[in-house]
Image 1 (cartoon, one colour):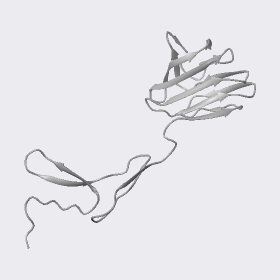
Image 2 (image 1 turned 135 degrees about the horizontal axis):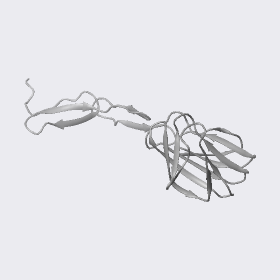
Image 3 (image 1 turned 90 degrees about the vertical axis):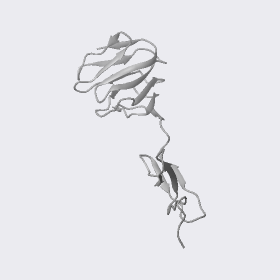
Image 4 (image 1 turned 30 degrees about the vertical axis):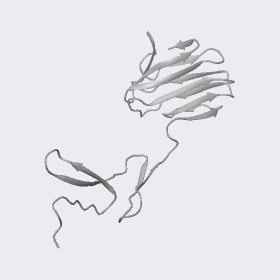
Length: 163
């Protein structure tokens, strides 16, 4: 028996791509970062797609100085002055949020070559630069604009001290 010309045989779960003229090709799904796949086989069954991780942004209540992590929000809820270091490694679009709610204040410190801008104000570039909260309720949302070095405040509440 010969296979008719218009039949496409796909051995794994997937999809069909048409090149626009006369050719169909079978493709399978590929897992990416944070995604796992279980391809079905045969006539019955469905492909299962699972996203791992928390789906993005997480929040923590903190009371100790630490290095900030991307896609994390921090409620500074206990303790005295919390020194919060920008992460040394970041990519464009990485986001961090910090809220003062109980601690005396927070200060976001920088590493070599790093800088933070809020509107027309900016910190001094490098390890000597910082931004500090002044009152309870101060909050800031930082987004990395240039990998590893430049952060922009896209929203904030309160007044801050820039060094």
